[in-house]
Image (cartoon, rainbow, N blue to C red; front, side, top):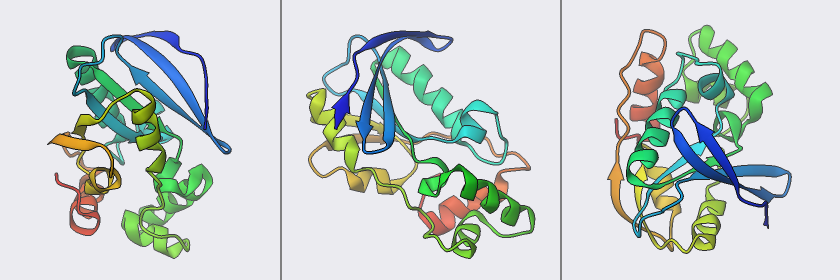
Length: 185
């Protein structure tokens, strides 16, 4: 794992610091507050170009990211932004999965139709990043139990759900996340 220098990131959500970690061909980003508390608020966020940058209403990713940035600005902590688009299947395949969803498949069925598991993400680098920051305990901002279970050497003292109001475009998506992927919504 290779690490970049630390830089300032003033944003509409607050003034943060950023650092990038290179893992093979993936480059992840950590957005963090200058004063990280002993037990910080941490969001493990997988890249979602359509939700994070384009404001897609088909998912809840952009809203979860905004909530996390506002929370860490207020309470201290970090967002670990992992470059694993489309639950790890990549942008090209994610768009193909969207097309299948347009034809009635849910998000899990679409991934299966494309020959992928429901969720291909790998969270193993998260512990390395937290170790690099000297963090042993966190307050995890997530609805996804896989993220909590992926942390073996870091104690999750509290899991804080991120509640997003459903809309007509993401109701089935959120229902599928809850029923098929075990998200605690």
